[in-house]
Image (tube, rainbow, N blue to C red; front, top):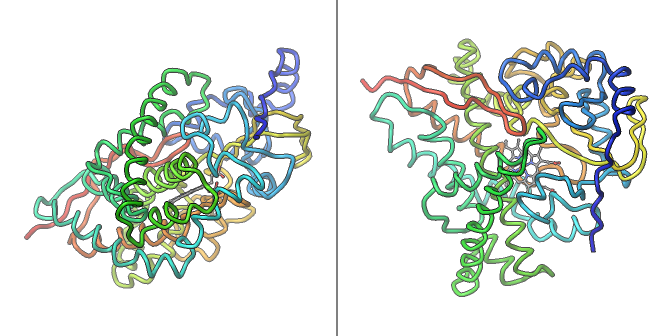
Length: 410
Ligand code: HEM
């Protein structure tokens, strides 16, 4: 039975002492972590206080890449098993909210199909087909809002395909996952959003249980059929909980990686031209986009025991967040970190897929989906140009809220 850590309450005098010791962190406002265009606040924090007390977050914030990696590395004094974990409150108990043996038990049955070779064998054709058939629906129009017309429905359809699930209409799945994503914001104002997430979870669970039953009645070679029949020590509730997080992991993130990569390419015409001439460069273009605008911008952990990180002592039972966005712009690892460079040799050293035992299960599939989606869009939409668009923002998940593309239909 898992014992959840209850986050310690920091009293006023301790908070005041910490504000004095970490003046830059004390000045950070929650909007600095959420809104587009405020990334330089994080750059200042990383330069002066790479591990800092940030009252606006109600916890510590790690912005340096080295301490972030040290925090995420496998270690017994750091946990995701906390009462206050908003991912757990929305998505329940599953691999991403479990530590150690329990985490291994829940993740292992799903690992084989997500290894690099398996991903290419199982999914490469499907990804290209799904991307192509969506583009068919709007190619004649000469313009689209990329998120609504392509990136979101592509991510939902692929999530269903990879698991072998019939998810029905992709807009209702998107609504469910938006409710989860909105409930993962640590701004101290979570109750209403959590209620919406709980109701979304109930709707999704009904669908997933009935799909599990269908896979048992009428099995295919899908991931869900295999796990449903072989069980591998998991109860139905546990299988459904893992399907929930695997799907969640694959929706908002893929929407973001597709939009962010195209945004950056279109903002850098010379590099866009290079990629058009040599689609092999898309591997670097996608890795670099995922570094500079990480779809998952924030990762949460709690201390089980007191730890020391970059010379800062953090007591037991405290909230420690990693700003993936800040760590990925750390000049000690990435030269000219604020520029987009499809040739950057070490873009994959970014922490965008985390590090340690919770490293993204779908990392290879994510790269494949994004590369193929962007390649198909570029190939099918001539004279592609960027229309009205928002700058990428968001606390936990980062992308432009909306982004218009135009192309020639002549
Ligand atoms: C560009 C797209 C993606 C990004 C940036 C991304 C990022 C991440 C990150 C940062 C984590 C770790 C979170 C933490 O440690 O707290 C994670 C975990 C996870 N991701 Fe992804 N992800 C992406 C796509 C996918 C896809 C396509 C799948 C589908 C298989 C997926 C499934 C998962 C799962 C199941 C976990 C939990 C792993 C565990 O706890 O052991 N992700 N992802």
